Length: 267
Image (cartoon, rainbow, N blue to C red; front, side, top):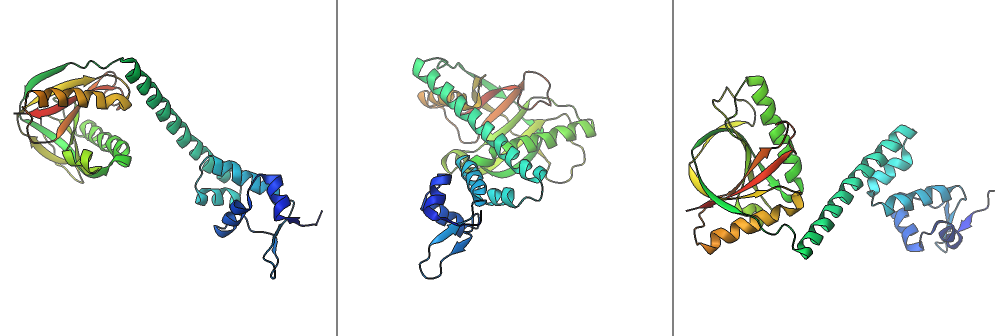
C-alpha cells in the first residue's frame, strides 16, 4: 500500500496526539513522509506506524529522546537491545527505591522503628588513608562506592592493616546546600607511598554522640534525627562534620553489607 495516511488517521492508529507527533518531528524522532507545502498538513506511511508505537512505548518508560533516537537508528538488534536493557535496569532500581520509600512511610505511620538509642564516646586521633571529592546528592552513592573500592584495593595491594571500620565525613553544607566536599577514609596502621587522589590524614581526637542504624538507607534519617535531637536537648553540639562509620556485617569488601553509625560531634 502506497497511500499516505493523514495525521488524524495516523494519530488514531498510534495513540499519539497531533501535538506529540509535531514534537517528535521537531526533535528528529519521526519525520512525516510528506508535508504539504501550502497547507502544512503532515502525512505518514503505513510502515511508520510500527516506529511510532515503539516511540510511544519507550517514552512512556521515560527513555531519554537521545536514547530513543539510538534505538531507532541502531544498526543491529544487539545495539538496540543494549540501550533498552540498560534503561530497564535503571527503572528497576528506581522501582526498588520507590518500594523502599513506601515501606519506610508505612513504618513511620505505624510508629515502627522510631526508638533509636544514642550513646556517647571519646574517639582517639586516627591515621587514615582518605579520598576527598566535591559531591552532590545525586552522585553520592556512586562516588562513595568508587572511593571505598579504591581505598580497599590499596589496602590489599600495599599490605596495609586497617585499624577500624570505614568512615565518611559529611559537613553541614552537604545537607543545607545539597553539595559539599566529602571525605571517605579507612583507619590504618601505617601509610605507604601514595599516588593519585589518595592522601594520608590524621583525624583529630574528639567526642561524639552515636546512633546505630541497621536497615534500609531510606530510613537513615531516623538515626540522624535521634542523635541530633539528643545533642540539641543537652546543648552540647560542637562544630564539625557528622561522621558515618560503616560496621561490616559480612565480607569487608562487600561495601553494602554493613550497619551505619551516625557520629555527631559534641563538646
